[in-house]
Length: 137
Image (tube, rainbow, N blue to C red; front, top):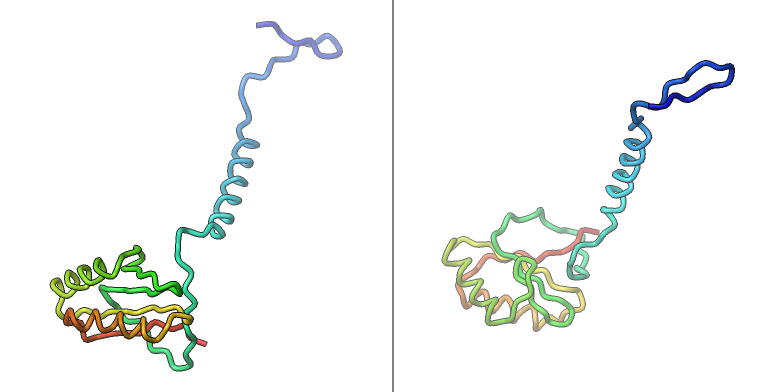
């Protein structure tokens, strides 16, 4: 290995090790940027505007959740389903637990008749405990 001559005629050793501190600093800054920006990334979800209520009850622990979107699209525990599939899933939930609570989340622009029809399907299955999901004011 050739040595590098410094001014004044003395030999100076070459760079033997790599300083990783600047690289670690850059990686940590990138990690922080990724973590902060990850909170703004919206996962695949549906937009439902829940009606507001002054006297909302506490959260009910439940095994079943049905969401009715503005365009009458039905969702079972977050997954899109048809009316026939919803009825089958309600039967399955009722078969697992006769004391199942059904949380109904309906968009504030959904029609009253659609919500009543949804509750009627659940009552036909045998589910009698319902909670209507609302946002507190």
